[in-house]
Image 1 (spheres, rainbow, N blue to C red):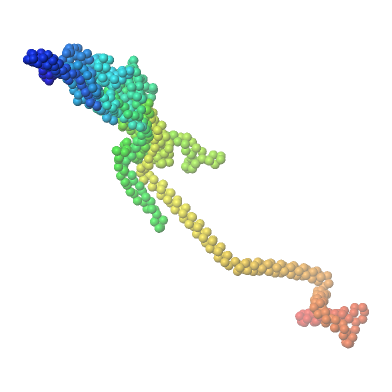
Image 2: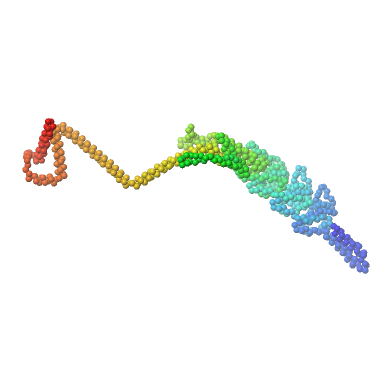
Length: 610
Protein backbone atom coordinates (compact mmCIF):
# COMPACT_ATOMS: atom_id res chain seq x y z
CA UNK A 1 0.00 0.00 0.00
CA UNK A 2 2.73 2.52 0.95
CA UNK A 3 4.78 1.62 -2.07
CA UNK A 4 1.77 2.07 -4.26
CA UNK A 5 1.07 5.56 -2.83
CA UNK A 6 4.69 6.58 -3.24
CA UNK A 7 4.72 5.32 -6.78
CA UNK A 8 1.43 7.17 -7.60
CA UNK A 9 2.77 10.39 -6.02
CA UNK A 10 5.95 10.09 -8.05
CA UNK A 11 3.92 9.54 -11.18
CA UNK A 12 1.68 12.55 -10.42
CA UNK A 13 4.71 14.75 -9.80
CA UNK A 14 6.14 13.65 -13.09
CA UNK A 15 2.93 14.45 -14.87
CA UNK A 16 1.89 17.70 -13.23
CA UNK A 17 4.81 19.26 -11.34
CA UNK A 18 8.02 18.40 -13.10
CA UNK A 19 6.93 19.82 -16.51
CA UNK A 20 6.58 23.30 -14.94
CA UNK A 21 10.26 23.31 -14.13
CA UNK A 22 11.41 22.25 -17.56
CA UNK A 23 12.78 25.25 -19.62
CA UNK A 24 10.90 26.14 -22.73
CA UNK A 25 14.01 25.89 -24.81
CA UNK A 26 14.05 22.18 -24.10
CA UNK A 27 10.89 21.80 -26.06
CA UNK A 28 7.54 20.13 -25.80
CA UNK A 29 9.02 16.76 -26.61
CA UNK A 30 10.87 16.63 -23.35
CA UNK A 31 7.86 17.76 -21.41
CA UNK A 32 5.71 15.07 -23.00
CA UNK A 33 8.38 12.52 -22.26
CA UNK A 34 8.39 13.40 -18.57
CA UNK A 35 4.62 13.27 -18.40
CA UNK A 36 4.65 9.91 -20.21
CA UNK A 37 7.13 8.62 -17.68
CA UNK A 38 4.86 9.71 -14.87
CA UNK A 39 1.94 7.92 -16.48
CA UNK A 40 4.05 4.79 -16.83
CA UNK A 41 5.00 4.97 -13.16
CA UNK A 42 1.37 5.29 -12.13
CA UNK A 43 0.28 2.45 -14.44
CA UNK A 44 3.11 0.24 -13.17
CA UNK A 45 2.13 1.02 -9.61
CA UNK A 46 -1.48 0.03 -10.29
CA UNK A 47 -0.60 -3.10 -12.24
CA UNK A 48 1.85 -4.23 -9.61
CA UNK A 49 -1.04 -4.48 -7.15
CA UNK A 50 -3.46 -6.20 -9.55
CA UNK A 51 -2.11 -9.74 -9.92
CA UNK A 52 -1.40 -12.76 -7.78
CA UNK A 53 0.71 -15.77 -8.73
CA UNK A 54 -0.18 -18.78 -6.51
CA UNK A 55 2.35 -21.59 -6.39
CA UNK A 56 1.63 -25.30 -6.96
CA UNK A 57 0.13 -27.12 -3.98
CA UNK A 58 -0.98 -23.87 -2.41
CA UNK A 59 -3.92 -21.51 -2.50
CA UNK A 60 -4.53 -17.90 -1.42
CA UNK A 61 -7.20 -16.77 1.03
CA UNK A 62 -8.64 -13.25 0.67
CA UNK A 63 -9.53 -10.72 3.34
CA UNK A 64 -11.08 -7.54 1.92
CA UNK A 65 -9.96 -4.34 3.57
CA UNK A 66 -11.35 -1.59 1.35
CA UNK A 67 -14.16 -0.90 -0.99
CA UNK A 68 -16.76 -3.30 0.43
CA UNK A 69 -19.68 -2.93 2.76
CA UNK A 70 -20.01 -4.40 6.19
CA UNK A 71 -21.18 -7.96 6.84
CA UNK A 72 -24.68 -8.15 8.29
CA UNK A 73 -26.90 -10.77 9.86
CA UNK A 74 -24.15 -12.36 11.89
CA UNK A 75 -22.26 -13.43 8.82
CA UNK A 76 -18.59 -14.19 9.17
CA UNK A 77 -17.56 -14.98 5.62
CA UNK A 78 -18.43 -12.61 2.73
CA UNK A 79 -19.78 -13.93 -0.54
CA UNK A 80 -20.82 -10.61 -2.13
CA UNK A 81 -17.63 -8.57 -1.80
CA UNK A 82 -18.24 -7.28 1.74
CA UNK A 83 -15.27 -6.37 3.79
CA UNK A 84 -13.85 -9.15 5.82
CA UNK A 85 -12.99 -12.85 5.20
CA UNK A 86 -13.89 -13.87 1.71
CA UNK A 87 -15.54 -17.13 0.74
CA UNK A 88 -13.58 -17.40 -2.46
CA UNK A 89 -9.96 -18.46 -2.65
CA UNK A 90 -7.36 -18.19 -5.38
CA UNK A 91 -6.19 -21.54 -6.70
CA UNK A 92 -2.66 -22.24 -7.99
CA UNK A 93 -1.75 -20.13 -11.04
CA UNK A 94 -1.60 -16.52 -12.25
CA UNK A 95 -4.59 -14.33 -11.31
CA UNK A 96 -5.13 -10.72 -12.55
CA UNK A 97 -7.58 -8.55 -10.62
CA UNK A 98 -7.44 -4.76 -10.52
CA UNK A 99 -5.95 -3.55 -7.29
CA UNK A 100 -6.38 -6.96 -5.70
CA UNK A 101 -3.31 -6.43 -3.56
CA UNK A 102 -4.63 -3.03 -2.54
CA UNK A 103 -8.17 -4.01 -1.67
CA UNK A 104 -7.42 -7.43 -0.12
CA UNK A 105 -5.01 -8.86 2.31
CA UNK A 106 -3.71 -12.05 0.70
CA UNK A 107 -2.52 -15.13 2.54
CA UNK A 108 -0.62 -17.18 -0.05
CA UNK A 109 0.99 -19.54 2.47
CA UNK A 110 -1.94 -21.92 2.64
CA UNK A 111 -1.27 -25.50 1.61
CA UNK A 112 -3.73 -28.18 0.60
CA UNK A 113 -5.04 -30.08 3.63
CA UNK A 114 -4.22 -33.79 3.54
CA UNK A 115 -6.24 -36.49 5.29
CA UNK A 116 -3.88 -39.49 5.60
CA UNK A 117 -4.90 -43.13 5.28
CA UNK A 118 -6.64 -44.52 8.35
CA UNK A 119 -7.93 -41.07 9.29
CA UNK A 120 -11.09 -39.12 8.64
CA UNK A 121 -11.52 -35.33 8.55
CA UNK A 122 -14.23 -34.03 10.86
CA UNK A 123 -15.62 -30.72 9.56
CA UNK A 124 -17.04 -27.83 11.56
CA UNK A 125 -18.50 -24.83 9.71
CA UNK A 126 -18.03 -21.37 11.25
CA UNK A 127 -20.71 -19.76 9.14
CA UNK A 128 -23.94 -20.74 7.46
CA UNK A 129 -27.56 -21.28 8.30
CA UNK A 130 -28.25 -21.89 11.99
CA UNK A 131 -29.17 -25.39 13.16
CA UNK A 132 -32.82 -26.13 13.70
CA UNK A 133 -34.11 -26.53 17.27
CA UNK A 134 -33.14 -29.94 18.58
CA UNK A 135 -30.61 -30.44 15.79
CA UNK A 136 -27.12 -31.42 16.92
CA UNK A 137 -25.33 -31.86 13.60
CA UNK A 138 -25.77 -30.09 10.31
CA UNK A 139 -27.51 -31.86 7.50
CA UNK A 140 -25.18 -33.84 5.25
CA UNK A 141 -24.08 -32.29 2.01
CA UNK A 142 -26.57 -32.48 -0.80
CA UNK A 143 -25.92 -35.60 -2.90
CA UNK A 144 -26.00 -33.66 -6.16
CA UNK A 145 -23.32 -31.27 -4.86
CA UNK A 146 -21.20 -33.57 -2.73
CA UNK A 147 -17.75 -32.39 -1.68
CA UNK A 148 -18.11 -29.32 -3.88
CA UNK A 149 -19.71 -27.91 -0.74
CA UNK A 150 -16.19 -27.54 0.62
CA UNK A 151 -16.00 -24.38 -1.45
CA UNK A 152 -17.15 -21.73 1.01
CA UNK A 153 -19.13 -19.76 -1.58
CA UNK A 154 -20.92 -22.92 -2.78
CA UNK A 155 -21.61 -23.94 0.81
CA UNK A 156 -23.05 -20.60 1.82
CA UNK A 157 -25.09 -20.12 -1.34
CA UNK A 158 -26.62 -23.63 -0.94
CA UNK A 159 -27.74 -22.87 2.62
CA UNK A 160 -25.18 -24.97 4.37
CA UNK A 161 -25.56 -25.09 8.16
CA UNK A 162 -22.99 -23.93 10.58
CA UNK A 163 -21.67 -26.21 13.29
CA UNK A 164 -20.52 -29.87 13.30
CA UNK A 165 -21.05 -31.57 9.96
CA UNK A 166 -22.22 -35.10 9.28
CA UNK A 167 -20.25 -35.12 6.08
CA UNK A 168 -16.63 -36.09 6.68
CA UNK A 169 -13.47 -36.06 4.58
CA UNK A 170 -12.04 -39.44 3.56
CA UNK A 171 -8.28 -39.73 2.95
CA UNK A 172 -7.20 -37.28 0.21
CA UNK A 173 -6.05 -33.65 -0.30
CA UNK A 174 -8.47 -30.74 -0.02
CA UNK A 175 -8.55 -26.94 -0.34
CA UNK A 176 -9.85 -25.83 3.01
CA UNK A 177 -10.83 -22.19 3.59
CA UNK A 178 -9.89 -21.58 7.18
CA UNK A 179 -12.30 -18.64 7.34
CA UNK A 180 -15.18 -21.12 7.05
CA UNK A 181 -13.87 -24.55 8.03
CA UNK A 182 -12.02 -26.15 10.87
CA UNK A 183 -10.90 -29.76 10.37
CA UNK A 184 -10.01 -32.35 13.01
CA UNK A 185 -8.43 -35.67 12.18
CA UNK A 186 -9.77 -38.81 13.82
CA UNK A 187 -9.32 -42.53 13.29
CA UNK A 188 -11.52 -44.38 10.86
CA UNK A 189 -13.80 -47.13 12.15
CA UNK A 190 -13.03 -50.69 11.01
CA UNK A 191 -15.43 -53.61 11.27
CA UNK A 192 -13.25 -56.71 11.16
CA UNK A 193 -14.02 -60.01 9.52
CA UNK A 194 -16.26 -62.14 11.71
CA UNK A 195 -17.86 -59.06 13.27
CA UNK A 196 -20.73 -56.72 12.51
CA UNK A 197 -20.94 -53.11 13.59
CA UNK A 198 -24.06 -52.16 15.51
CA UNK A 199 -24.71 -48.43 15.09
CA UNK A 200 -25.88 -46.19 17.91
CA UNK A 201 -26.90 -42.95 16.24
CA UNK A 202 -27.23 -39.49 17.77
CA UNK A 203 -28.91 -37.95 14.72
CA UNK A 204 -32.02 -38.33 12.65
CA UNK A 205 -30.98 -37.99 9.04
CA UNK A 206 -30.43 -39.71 5.72
CA UNK A 207 -27.59 -42.22 5.80
CA UNK A 208 -24.97 -43.24 3.28
CA UNK A 209 -22.36 -45.60 4.69
CA UNK A 210 -21.66 -47.33 1.41
CA UNK A 211 -22.97 -50.78 2.33
CA UNK A 212 -25.75 -49.21 4.38
CA UNK A 213 -27.90 -46.49 2.85
CA UNK A 214 -31.27 -45.13 3.93
CA UNK A 215 -33.38 -42.06 3.41
CA UNK A 216 -34.40 -40.00 6.36
CA UNK A 217 -37.22 -41.95 8.04
CA UNK A 218 -40.61 -40.31 8.40
CA UNK A 219 -41.12 -41.86 11.84
CA UNK A 220 -38.69 -43.17 14.42
CA UNK A 221 -40.72 -45.61 16.46
CA UNK A 222 -39.22 -48.55 18.31
CA UNK A 223 -39.48 -51.78 16.32
CA UNK A 224 -41.45 -54.36 18.37
CA UNK A 225 -39.76 -57.66 19.25
CA UNK A 226 -40.52 -60.72 17.17
CA UNK A 227 -41.54 -62.88 20.12
CA UNK A 228 -42.35 -61.50 23.55
CA UNK A 229 -44.05 -64.64 24.90
CA UNK A 230 -40.83 -66.47 25.75
CA UNK A 231 -39.46 -63.82 28.08
CA UNK A 232 -37.29 -62.22 25.41
CA UNK A 233 -35.47 -59.10 26.56
CA UNK A 234 -36.98 -55.79 25.49
CA UNK A 235 -34.52 -54.13 23.11
CA UNK A 236 -35.36 -50.58 21.86
CA UNK A 237 -34.31 -50.93 18.23
CA UNK A 238 -35.13 -48.21 15.67
CA UNK A 239 -34.99 -47.99 11.85
CA UNK A 240 -31.78 -46.91 10.14
CA UNK A 241 -31.44 -43.14 10.21
CA UNK A 242 -33.22 -42.60 13.53
CA UNK A 243 -31.75 -41.70 16.89
CA UNK A 244 -30.94 -44.90 18.81
CA UNK A 245 -29.69 -48.39 18.02
CA UNK A 246 -30.29 -49.23 14.38
CA UNK A 247 -31.98 -52.42 13.35
CA UNK A 248 -29.45 -53.16 10.60
CA UNK A 249 -25.74 -53.57 11.38
CA UNK A 250 -22.67 -52.70 9.33
CA UNK A 251 -20.93 -55.49 7.51
CA UNK A 252 -17.13 -55.95 7.74
CA UNK A 253 -15.26 -53.05 6.13
CA UNK A 254 -13.81 -49.56 6.71
CA UNK A 255 -16.20 -46.69 7.42
CA UNK A 256 -15.80 -42.89 7.46
CA UNK A 257 -18.19 -41.01 9.71
CA UNK A 258 -18.29 -38.50 12.50
CA UNK A 259 -17.67 -40.46 15.71
CA UNK A 260 -19.52 -37.77 17.65
CA UNK A 261 -22.64 -38.54 15.60
CA UNK A 262 -22.36 -42.34 15.43
CA UNK A 263 -20.94 -44.97 17.75
CA UNK A 264 -20.05 -48.38 16.34
CA UNK A 265 -20.23 -51.34 18.72
CA UNK A 266 -18.48 -54.37 17.18
CA UNK A 267 -20.24 -57.67 17.88
CA UNK A 268 -18.44 -60.93 17.26
CA UNK A 269 -20.69 -63.20 15.20
CA UNK A 270 -18.27 -66.12 15.26
CA UNK A 271 -18.86 -69.15 17.45
CA UNK A 272 -17.82 -68.36 21.03
CA UNK A 273 -16.34 -71.11 23.21
CA UNK A 274 -16.96 -70.50 26.89
CA UNK A 275 -15.07 -72.84 29.17
CA UNK A 276 -15.91 -73.39 32.83
CA UNK A 277 -12.93 -75.10 34.42
CA UNK A 278 -10.46 -74.96 37.30
CA UNK A 279 -10.82 -73.84 40.88
CA UNK A 280 -11.02 -77.29 42.46
CA UNK A 281 -8.91 -80.20 43.64
CA UNK A 282 -8.78 -83.40 41.61
CA UNK A 283 -7.95 -86.58 43.56
CA UNK A 284 -7.17 -90.08 42.36
CA UNK A 285 -6.73 -93.46 44.02
CA UNK A 286 -4.34 -95.75 42.19
CA UNK A 287 -4.44 -99.51 42.69
CA UNK A 288 -1.34 -101.70 42.46
CA UNK A 289 -0.90 -105.47 42.69
CA UNK A 290 2.20 -106.95 44.33
CA UNK A 291 3.85 -110.28 43.58
CA UNK A 292 1.56 -112.05 46.06
CA UNK A 293 -1.56 -110.82 44.26
CA UNK A 294 -2.54 -108.42 47.02
CA UNK A 295 -4.12 -105.07 46.00
CA UNK A 296 -2.75 -101.82 47.49
CA UNK A 297 -4.19 -98.33 46.97
CA UNK A 298 -2.59 -94.87 47.05
CA UNK A 299 -4.47 -91.53 47.12
CA UNK A 300 -3.01 -88.43 45.40
CA UNK A 301 -4.51 -84.95 44.85
CA UNK A 302 -3.74 -82.08 42.49
CA UNK A 303 -5.02 -78.50 42.60
CA UNK A 304 -6.54 -77.36 39.29
CA UNK A 305 -6.10 -73.55 39.19
CA UNK A 306 -8.48 -71.04 37.66
CA UNK A 307 -7.62 -69.34 34.38
CA UNK A 308 -9.64 -66.11 34.12
CA UNK A 309 -7.87 -65.06 30.92
CA UNK A 310 -8.89 -68.11 28.92
CA UNK A 311 -11.94 -69.42 30.79
CA UNK A 312 -15.35 -67.88 31.26
CA UNK A 313 -15.53 -69.02 34.88
CA UNK A 314 -14.41 -71.79 37.21
CA UNK A 315 -15.89 -75.29 37.22
CA UNK A 316 -19.49 -75.83 38.32
CA UNK A 317 -19.88 -77.62 41.66
CA UNK A 318 -22.88 -79.95 41.64
CA UNK A 319 -24.35 -81.88 44.57
CA UNK A 320 -24.88 -85.54 43.66
CA UNK A 321 -25.73 -88.31 46.12
CA UNK A 322 -24.35 -86.17 48.93
CA UNK A 323 -21.04 -85.50 47.20
CA UNK A 324 -19.72 -82.19 45.81
CA UNK A 325 -18.54 -82.97 42.29
CA UNK A 326 -16.62 -80.30 40.30
CA UNK A 327 -17.89 -80.43 36.74
CA UNK A 328 -16.14 -78.78 33.79
CA UNK A 329 -18.17 -77.55 30.82
CA UNK A 330 -17.54 -76.23 27.35
CA UNK A 331 -20.37 -74.16 25.87
CA UNK A 332 -20.42 -73.02 22.23
CA UNK A 333 -22.59 -69.92 21.69
CA UNK A 334 -23.14 -67.61 18.75
CA UNK A 335 -24.86 -64.33 17.92
CA UNK A 336 -26.26 -64.08 14.40
CA UNK A 337 -25.75 -60.78 12.49
CA UNK A 338 -29.50 -60.17 12.51
CA UNK A 339 -29.56 -60.41 16.32
CA UNK A 340 -26.50 -58.24 16.98
CA UNK A 341 -28.59 -55.07 17.42
CA UNK A 342 -30.82 -56.89 19.91
CA UNK A 343 -27.75 -57.85 21.97
CA UNK A 344 -26.51 -54.24 22.08
CA UNK A 345 -29.91 -52.71 22.82
CA UNK A 346 -30.99 -55.38 25.31
CA UNK A 347 -27.79 -56.25 27.17
CA UNK A 348 -24.89 -54.15 25.95
CA UNK A 349 -22.21 -56.44 24.55
CA UNK A 350 -21.41 -60.09 24.04
CA UNK A 351 -19.22 -60.08 27.16
CA UNK A 352 -22.14 -58.79 29.22
CA UNK A 353 -24.38 -61.48 27.72
CA UNK A 354 -21.86 -64.04 28.91
CA UNK A 355 -21.33 -62.59 32.38
CA UNK A 356 -24.79 -61.27 33.24
CA UNK A 357 -27.13 -63.73 31.56
CA UNK A 358 -25.69 -67.00 30.32
CA UNK A 359 -23.06 -67.85 32.93
CA UNK A 360 -25.53 -67.71 35.87
CA UNK A 361 -28.08 -69.66 33.82
CA UNK A 362 -25.55 -72.28 32.76
CA UNK A 363 -24.39 -72.84 36.33
CA UNK A 364 -27.96 -73.06 37.68
CA UNK A 365 -29.23 -75.41 34.96
CA UNK A 366 -26.17 -77.66 35.23
CA UNK A 367 -26.77 -77.99 38.97
CA UNK A 368 -30.48 -78.71 38.40
CA UNK A 369 -29.85 -81.42 35.82
CA UNK A 370 -26.93 -83.06 37.63
CA UNK A 371 -28.63 -82.95 41.03
CA UNK A 372 -32.15 -83.66 39.80
CA UNK A 373 -33.84 -86.19 37.54
CA UNK A 374 -33.83 -86.87 33.84
CA UNK A 375 -35.32 -89.31 31.37
CA UNK A 376 -33.24 -92.27 30.26
CA UNK A 377 -33.63 -95.55 28.37
CA UNK A 378 -32.09 -98.41 30.33
CA UNK A 379 -32.48 -102.21 30.62
CA UNK A 380 -35.22 -103.48 32.93
CA UNK A 381 -33.92 -105.52 35.87
CA UNK A 382 -35.49 -108.00 38.29
CA UNK A 383 -35.27 -108.10 42.09
CA UNK A 384 -31.75 -109.51 41.95
CA UNK A 385 -30.52 -106.80 39.61
CA UNK A 386 -30.24 -109.07 36.57
CA UNK A 387 -31.53 -107.80 33.18
CA UNK A 388 -34.97 -109.02 32.14
CA UNK A 389 -34.84 -110.70 28.71
CA UNK A 390 -37.58 -110.89 26.07
CA UNK A 391 -38.58 -113.91 24.02
CA UNK A 392 -35.59 -113.45 21.73
CA UNK A 393 -33.16 -113.28 24.64
CA UNK A 394 -32.53 -109.54 24.31
CA UNK A 395 -32.67 -107.12 27.29
CA UNK A 396 -36.00 -105.36 27.76
CA UNK A 397 -35.45 -101.57 27.47
CA UNK A 398 -37.66 -99.22 29.48
CA UNK A 399 -38.01 -95.42 29.44
CA UNK A 400 -37.85 -94.06 32.97
CA UNK A 401 -37.24 -90.80 34.81
CA UNK A 402 -34.86 -91.27 37.69
CA UNK A 403 -32.45 -89.25 39.85
CA UNK A 404 -29.07 -88.52 38.35
CA UNK A 405 -26.26 -90.65 39.75
CA UNK A 406 -22.62 -89.72 40.05
CA UNK A 407 -21.61 -92.50 37.68
CA UNK A 408 -24.03 -91.09 35.09
CA UNK A 409 -21.46 -88.34 34.48
CA UNK A 410 -19.44 -91.11 32.82
CA UNK A 411 -21.99 -93.67 31.69
CA UNK A 412 -24.78 -91.30 30.59
CA UNK A 413 -22.79 -88.21 29.62
CA UNK A 414 -24.54 -87.61 26.24
CA UNK A 415 -27.96 -87.62 27.91
CA UNK A 416 -26.88 -85.09 30.54
CA UNK A 417 -25.27 -82.88 27.87
CA UNK A 418 -28.43 -82.95 25.77
CA UNK A 419 -30.59 -82.15 28.77
CA UNK A 420 -28.43 -79.16 29.77
CA UNK A 421 -28.36 -77.94 26.16
CA UNK A 422 -32.13 -78.32 25.86
CA UNK A 423 -32.75 -76.24 28.97
CA UNK A 424 -30.15 -73.53 28.36
CA UNK A 425 -31.24 -72.93 24.76
CA UNK A 426 -34.38 -70.89 25.59
CA UNK A 427 -32.46 -68.88 28.20
CA UNK A 428 -29.87 -67.88 25.60
CA UNK A 429 -32.54 -66.92 23.07
CA UNK A 430 -34.03 -64.52 25.59
CA UNK A 431 -30.81 -62.49 25.37
CA UNK A 432 -30.69 -62.79 21.55
CA UNK A 433 -27.94 -65.45 21.53
CA UNK A 434 -27.97 -69.09 20.52
CA UNK A 435 -26.36 -72.12 22.16
CA UNK A 436 -24.80 -74.42 19.58
CA UNK A 437 -23.63 -77.19 21.89
CA UNK A 438 -22.83 -78.09 25.49
CA UNK A 439 -20.09 -80.57 26.31
CA UNK A 440 -19.04 -81.92 29.69
CA UNK A 441 -15.40 -82.23 30.57
CA UNK A 442 -13.80 -84.97 32.62
CA UNK A 443 -15.71 -84.95 35.93
CA UNK A 444 -13.68 -84.88 39.14
CA UNK A 445 -15.63 -87.71 40.76
CA UNK A 446 -14.50 -88.45 44.33
CA UNK A 447 -12.23 -91.47 43.96
CA UNK A 448 -13.82 -93.12 47.02
CA UNK A 449 -16.92 -93.73 44.88
CA UNK A 450 -14.96 -95.55 42.21
CA UNK A 451 -12.39 -97.47 44.22
CA UNK A 452 -14.81 -100.30 45.12
CA UNK A 453 -15.74 -100.80 41.48
CA UNK A 454 -12.12 -100.63 40.44
CA UNK A 455 -11.08 -103.15 43.08
CA UNK A 456 -13.86 -105.47 41.93
CA UNK A 457 -12.78 -105.06 38.31
CA UNK A 458 -9.16 -105.66 39.23
CA UNK A 459 -10.05 -108.74 41.29
CA UNK A 460 -12.14 -110.06 38.40
CA UNK A 461 -9.29 -109.50 36.02
CA UNK A 462 -6.88 -111.24 38.38
CA UNK A 463 -9.25 -114.19 38.64
CA UNK A 464 -9.54 -114.39 34.90
CA UNK A 465 -5.80 -114.13 34.59
CA UNK A 466 -5.33 -116.95 37.14
CA UNK A 467 -7.78 -119.15 35.23
CA UNK A 468 -6.04 -118.35 31.98
CA UNK A 469 -2.69 -119.19 33.52
CA UNK A 470 -4.07 -122.53 34.78
CA UNK A 471 -5.48 -123.32 31.37
CA UNK A 472 -2.21 -122.35 29.77
CA UNK A 473 -0.31 -124.57 32.23
CA UNK A 474 -2.66 -127.47 31.55
CA UNK A 475 -2.25 -127.02 27.84
CA UNK A 476 1.50 -126.86 28.27
CA UNK A 477 1.46 -130.16 30.26
CA UNK A 478 -0.75 -131.75 27.64
CA UNK A 479 1.60 -130.51 24.96
CA UNK A 480 4.66 -131.91 26.76
CA UNK A 481 2.82 -135.17 27.36
CA UNK A 482 1.82 -135.40 23.72
CA UNK A 483 5.40 -134.64 22.69
CA UNK A 484 6.78 -137.36 25.04
CA UNK A 485 4.12 -139.80 23.83
CA UNK A 486 5.12 -139.06 20.25
CA UNK A 487 8.75 -139.72 21.12
CA UNK A 488 7.83 -143.18 22.67
CA UNK A 489 5.36 -144.06 19.96
CA UNK A 490 7.13 -147.28 18.75
CA UNK A 491 7.38 -148.65 22.28
CA UNK A 492 3.79 -147.68 23.00
CA UNK A 493 2.62 -149.39 19.82
CA UNK A 494 4.49 -152.57 20.72
CA UNK A 495 3.10 -152.47 24.26
CA UNK A 496 -0.37 -151.84 22.94
CA UNK A 497 0.00 -154.75 20.52
CA UNK A 498 1.28 -156.96 23.35
CA UNK A 499 -1.65 -155.93 25.50
CA UNK A 500 -4.05 -156.69 22.70
CA UNK A 501 -2.28 -160.05 22.03
CA UNK A 502 -2.46 -161.04 25.69
CA UNK A 503 -6.09 -160.05 25.75
CA UNK A 504 -6.76 -162.20 22.69
CA UNK A 505 -4.80 -165.12 24.22
CA UNK A 506 -6.65 -164.81 27.48
CA UNK A 507 -9.90 -164.75 25.59
CA UNK A 508 -8.84 -167.83 23.55
CA UNK A 509 -7.77 -169.68 26.67
CA UNK A 510 -10.98 -168.76 28.33
CA UNK A 511 -12.96 -169.96 25.36
CA UNK A 512 -10.89 -173.15 25.17
CA UNK A 513 -11.36 -173.83 28.89
CA UNK A 514 -15.04 -173.15 28.58
CA UNK A 515 -15.20 -175.58 25.66
CA UNK A 516 -13.29 -178.21 27.59
CA UNK A 517 -15.54 -177.67 30.56
CA UNK A 518 -18.60 -178.04 28.44
CA UNK A 519 -17.10 -181.18 26.85
CA UNK A 520 -16.34 -182.75 30.20
CA UNK A 521 -19.76 -181.89 31.46
CA UNK A 522 -21.34 -183.53 28.46
CA UNK A 523 -18.99 -186.53 28.76
CA UNK A 524 -19.78 -186.92 32.42
CA UNK A 525 -23.47 -186.73 31.68
CA UNK A 526 -23.06 -189.31 28.93
CA UNK A 527 -21.04 -191.59 31.17
CA UNK A 528 -23.63 -191.21 33.92
CA UNK A 529 -26.34 -192.19 31.52
CA UNK A 530 -24.20 -195.04 30.12
CA UNK A 531 -23.51 -196.32 33.63
CA UNK A 532 -27.22 -196.37 34.39
CA UNK A 533 -27.85 -198.43 31.23
CA UNK A 534 -24.79 -200.81 31.02
CA UNK A 535 -23.72 -200.91 34.58
CA UNK A 536 -20.56 -199.69 36.19
CA UNK A 537 -18.25 -202.53 35.13
CA UNK A 538 -19.36 -202.55 31.55
CA UNK A 539 -19.07 -198.80 31.39
CA UNK A 540 -15.52 -198.95 32.76
CA UNK A 541 -14.61 -201.57 30.25
CA UNK A 542 -16.13 -199.61 27.44
CA UNK A 543 -14.25 -196.51 28.52
CA UNK A 544 -11.00 -198.46 28.63
CA UNK A 545 -11.75 -199.78 25.18
CA UNK A 546 -12.35 -196.34 23.83
CA UNK A 547 -9.18 -194.98 25.37
CA UNK A 548 -7.16 -197.81 23.93
CA UNK A 549 -8.68 -197.37 20.55
CA UNK A 550 -7.97 -193.66 20.63
CA UNK A 551 -4.36 -194.35 21.51
CA UNK A 552 -3.99 -197.00 18.84
CA UNK A 553 -5.58 -194.97 16.16
CA UNK A 554 -3.57 -191.95 17.30
CA UNK A 555 -0.37 -193.96 17.14
CA UNK A 556 -1.32 -195.46 13.82
CA UNK A 557 -2.02 -192.04 12.41
CA UNK A 558 1.24 -190.74 13.78
CA UNK A 559 3.33 -193.83 12.73
CA UNK A 560 1.73 -195.51 9.73
CA UNK A 561 5.06 -197.17 8.89
CA UNK A 562 4.83 -199.30 12.07
CA UNK A 563 1.44 -200.71 11.07
CA UNK A 564 2.70 -201.36 7.60
CA UNK A 565 5.72 -203.28 8.95
CA UNK A 566 3.62 -205.23 11.40
CA UNK A 567 1.28 -206.39 8.70
CA UNK A 568 4.25 -207.27 6.53
CA UNK A 569 5.82 -209.56 9.21
CA UNK A 570 2.61 -211.02 10.61
CA UNK A 571 3.34 -214.59 9.24
CA UNK A 572 6.52 -214.89 11.15
CA UNK A 573 4.87 -215.08 14.48
CA UNK A 574 2.97 -217.92 16.15
CA UNK A 575 -0.19 -216.79 17.73
CA UNK A 576 -0.68 -217.67 21.40
CA UNK A 577 -4.35 -217.25 21.19
CA UNK A 578 -6.71 -218.78 18.78
CA UNK A 579 -9.71 -216.89 17.98
CA UNK A 580 -12.52 -218.68 16.38
CA UNK A 581 -15.37 -217.05 14.68
CA UNK A 582 -15.43 -214.01 12.53
CA UNK A 583 -14.06 -211.43 15.02
CA UNK A 584 -10.60 -211.53 13.66
CA UNK A 585 -7.24 -211.37 15.33
CA UNK A 586 -7.63 -207.82 16.60
CA UNK A 587 -10.84 -208.63 18.35
CA UNK A 588 -9.32 -211.56 20.09
CA UNK A 589 -6.42 -209.57 21.27
CA UNK A 590 -8.65 -206.80 22.46
CA UNK A 591 -10.95 -209.26 24.20
CA UNK A 592 -8.05 -210.76 26.05
CA UNK A 593 -6.86 -207.30 27.02
CA UNK A 594 -10.24 -206.32 28.26
CA UNK A 595 -10.70 -209.56 30.20
CA UNK A 596 -7.35 -209.14 31.86
CA UNK A 597 -8.26 -205.60 32.70
CA UNK A 598 -11.61 -206.76 34.12
CA UNK A 599 -9.96 -209.44 36.17
CA UNK A 600 -7.49 -206.96 37.50
CA UNK A 601 -10.29 -204.56 38.39
CA UNK A 602 -12.22 -207.35 40.11
CA UNK A 603 -9.16 -208.41 42.12
CA UNK A 604 -8.57 -204.76 43.09
CA UNK A 605 -12.19 -204.51 44.18
CA UNK A 606 -12.00 -207.60 46.26
CA UNK A 607 -8.78 -206.47 47.88
CA UNK A 608 -10.45 -203.19 48.75
CA UNK A 609 -13.43 -205.08 50.27
CA UNK A 610 -11.06 -207.00 52.47
